[in-house]
Image: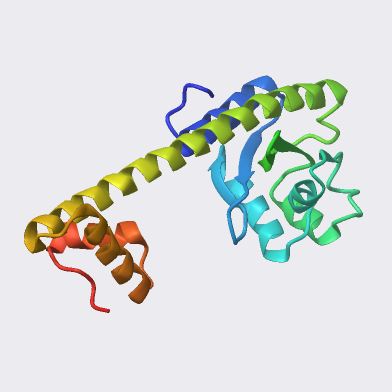
Length: 211
């Protein structure tokens, strides 16, 4: 998990390893997304994506509860689940009998949920839950690290774009670096466009966006 290239690769490694570490048929990871529904970047089967969709559409179910409470949620048997009866009926039709949702937490907070699914009832006992928690701890750190590295890479790329765009303005109009940056920032504000997108347009088209 820690050797995976990015966030998507990391969570894919998480769900694939989960099938080996815990006796279950399906696994998936849902991650927090800023200003919207959770993302589902990795699942071992389309069944998992369908189960997640039920919950995201209705904002109810063990996944939603796990994210809100930041606590492990176990559904021993979907045939007798009374907390989320509508969700349980839909999941039962997919052949899933038991569910284990474990929060992915770091010191900075919860980053998502690891979901494990079995076609057998009462599949997740104390031993399986203990293994899932160990896996979740490693997965939380791996995902948080991958996200941080991706954000750093994006920041570096953005700075490179802005630097190249400033160079074009400095050469074309004889500006110093401070003035060139102010021009880019002004166009960014006037057109409600991110600074690095203004820079990319200038590099690609050799012209600034219309204000």
